[in-house]
Image 1 (cartoon, rainbow, N blue to C red):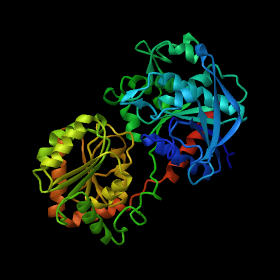
Image 2 (image 1 turned 45 degrees about the vertical axis):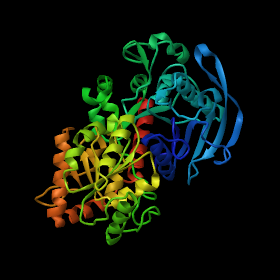
Image 3 (image 1 turned 90 degrees about the vertical axis):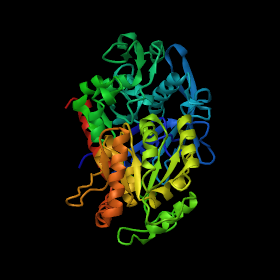
Length: 493
C-alpha cells in the first residue's frame, strides 16, 4: 500500500469561483477524485474581485502573506480559505487588490493586462510562501499553464533548499501551448532567480522571458490533456515555436484526457432539457429536438437533421473555415443552431446568416448554460471544426446525449470520437482531417446522407455514442500514478 500524498494544485482559475475555459473545469473537478483516492490535496488560486467572500463563506486565515517580488520588494497579501464545490477539498485564495481586484481574469476589452507578468509571478511565489505559512509540505506541486509555470523554476533555484517546499516534485499541465507568458526580459529582476537562468535552455525565448518554456524545462514531469495533443505539440504546426522544447522533454510528457462531470451532463437527469431520456429509452430526445427548434424559432421538423454548435467564435475553433463553408452547408436540407461569442466579425457574420436564412440557421451570441444543454440534447449532430483542440469537452457531452459529433481529427477530438465505418456500423461520429471548407462540407454531407438514407446506421451510431464514458475516476487514477512517479523521480530513484 503506497502512502497517501500531499498535493498542492496551483492554478489561475477554478470552477465555479473563476473560470474562462477548460483549465477552470479541470481544477474545479479533478481534485475531488484525487481526494477520494485518499490523498491530501489542496488548491491555491487568486481571490479575484468577482469572487464574493460571503457568498462562498471564505474565512481569513493566518496573518498577512509576504511575497518577495525581486526588484519590486516584498508585497503583502491576505489568504482566505474555502472549500471546493460539493467536497472537502480546501481552496486557498490569495488576495492582493492591486493585482486581482479587477473584473477580468486576464484581459480587459480583449487586451491582456499590462502587468500580467507580475500578477502571476506573485501568485506562483505566493503559493510557495503560503505552503510555508501553513506548514504544508507538498510531495507534489501540480501547476497549470504559463500562469503558474514559474513554480518549477523557483523550486529548482531559490527554493531548492527550503525545508518545506524544496523537496517537492513538480508537474506542469499544458492545457493550451498557444498561450505561453511571453514578457520583457526585465521580468528576470522580478523573478530574482538570477540572470544566469536567462538562457535558451531555460527562460529565454526570442529575447523575451517565456514562463511556460521555463516551466517545461524545470518541471519534474509534464502532462497535457490528450494523447494526440501530446504528440501534436512536438510539431511546428501545433507547437507555437516551443515544439523543440517539448520534444526535448518528450520522455517526461504524458497525455491524460479530461473527464466529464456526468452529474451535470447526463440526459437521464438533466434539469435544463425538455424531456429526459436514456440509451434504453430514447423517446425523449425527439421532444428535446422540437423544444430546441421552437426556442430558436426554426420550423419544428422531426425529419430534418439539426446540427448544433456551442463554441468560442475564434480562430482556434476553425470558425473562419466554417464561415467559408456556410453557404454550401445551407444548400443542404438541414437546420443549424449556434451558441457562442468571440471575434467581433463572427458575431456580425453569423448574425447576418441567421437573418438571411431564418428557416435554416439560428444563432445566439454569448453564453447560456441552459441553451448549451438544450443544444446537446436537441441536436442530431454536433459540429466542431477546430484548428486545434487540446482535449475538448463538448464532443464528450454530445456522445453522452446521443448527438453524433462531426469533428476535425485533432487533439482530444481524435482521441474521443471513433469514425463511422459504413461496413460494420461501428463508430461514434464523423471525422475529417484537412481543415478546409471542402472537408467540412463533404463530411457534413456524409453525415446527413447517412441520416436520410441509412436509419439503421444512425441508430447504431447513437447507441455506440451514448454508451461511451470518459470519467474522472479513470483520469484521476492516471494522475495518481504520475504523482507517485514524479515523487520517485524527484528523489532520483
